[in-house]
Image (tube, rainbow, N blue to C red):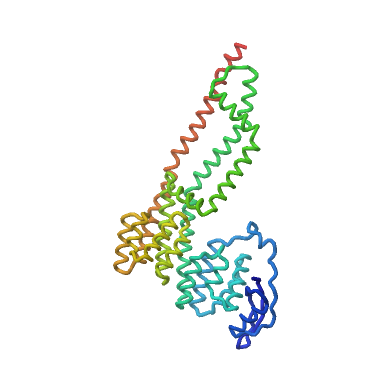
Length: 405
């Protein structure tokens, strides 16, 4: 299959242009004829510039830009402006070149007869499956403005969660980096200087000092190999995490980490409740909605539990029964799911459950620094103690060593 650009005129004589994937130009002409368009020119699309095709050089599309785009589309759709015109206009006004190029392609696809959701799915690195699914429902039900408004609200909640998590982990991360830099400087420069002093006096050093000097000598002699090993380990772990089983094991391990594991779990549960409530309100069937939720939850281990829920519902089990079998939810949330299923208002109660988890996450993040700070203090104290025993203890005895020699 190749990608072709075309210019054509529709049945009313209006100009059309866009992109179509087909085997030959004749196949493109056939597709255009099926929608009542008369092709004028058909040419194979040229490759984009190298800067746009290399993943590591691509300009990213930030979540703030997606939120703004979603709000703008909600407003334009509510005002009755056609989707093609709205997307084309936002493409021309976007300050992000990559987002502008993507929206231009989406507009061209729409002009070529492709539906909105399918066009968005072709850019899955920017528009998630959840985003495209909600837009698909809004497009089919004639409530596109409401779909864009809901996805914008969801993205705003995601942004706030990420901001809170970054804010809570900034101080511990800074301290850990400072400790790592300090250990590197000590091993590379400070301890070797003390070793020269000890060698001059040929002193009998305590085992703590010999251990520290040995570690420093090993570090100085083999640091290129240590660096290569560290980089290889990081690369290997990343490749393993990129596999399905590796991602499953890694995401499951994250939920069992001390202190922060419960925070990750509640963040994912809040995301599950938010997303499930939104897809139900959007009109997606429950089984299809759970498939979308599994892809949006951001944790492979919990995604498989959600897919197990979907399989249970397909077998005829209730949402409450499958949720209980998953073991993911607290008794309070299970009760709210049960009440929501009985009353037909499960979307509202799921939204309330999401708020319940978000409140827990807020409290946990606010107390995260207080929980980690004692551990960091103990780590720094242990490092200072080792240095005091291993380096400064022989110096305190240096005068007696000098007297003997």
